[in-house]
Image 1 (cartoon, one colour):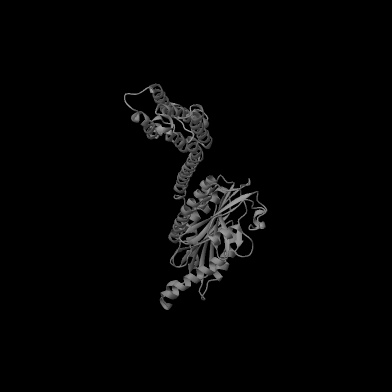
Image 2 (cartoon, helix red, strand yellow; image 1 turned 135 degrees about the horizontal axis):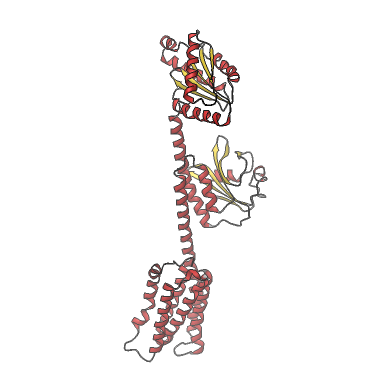
Length: 482
């Protein structure tokens, strides 16, 4: 069964409270028993049969609707107990509520309806067949009230139980997802994948605020181009969720006026749900999930799961950003903001390994500010620091995005130019040398990569070339080709 647990021992715990109430007619029956002994015996046998079947029968192997059978059997047992104890006067009609409550907790809606109908029939038939005085005409009023109240109570209980189970499942699924994203570095892709799985969606996307815009930073599922939404310039459901700080659902994203036609026209999405990601009182993102098949609504269990995931995502994103910031600080020179020696060793080693693997050209250079100690002594350490920062900024602006400029130590800097031969690198490095600010000069030593050369060997050769440049009067470039 989907809702009735498979282990017999666990089923016993579920059935015991109902069985205890079901045994009350036996405890309240007069002793010694009168002429209705056979009916009470029938009640006892049927009740025990129901208990044993619930505990021992392999319900997981049969259709879920079969769980209505024990309920129907127990209704017959209750009818026997009522008749044995004087019919309507016995008050045992309340026991008809037991199968309704049991199926409200562990059955489905169909089994609940079946047993509710059977209880009405079991209440009405004795009035028709046996009649007064055991079942007076006034019993019809009770039967009508029962017909209205019992199914309603069962449905309400069943809905509450279903919501509770869905909520528990959502918590369990989000907990699993949160556990996985908690240990990732930049966990935004993991957050999107978790949203995709939780919602059974075709696309999940995380959109975060940037100055004047909302920008997609991660995604999962359908691959779409990066999204950038200028705030206030076009219709956007993402912006609605961002500004309202409330979830937003669109059943038809392709034609809804709140969506940006520029963004949705190229997708196959039919419906979408927008969940704000809150950190305290601030919206730090919007989690978007979309489906290719039109949905009239999103199930409560899905919206609850996405809300829980968004709360976990806010914490995980903050943790990742802080970790990234700390890692960046640890790998950066605090004065110039350039990569430090540790970061240089990591990045340059990867460049050398790639050059070895692909045959791509690579040039390494060491640059040194000439007579920096004298400059420092004459003008002071603050002026020296200012020169280092200005030189770093000027040189960095002269390089491509893929080039690497790092502070090697003191007034010495290291440069890596991937994809550039020595002949191609020399004009670039000369341009850097001539751009040295504050009327100062710099010397450069250059080494070109050849297969088999490691990073340490390249740096050593560049250092030797730099030493020759210093010896040759400074303010010049010396090249060593391995």
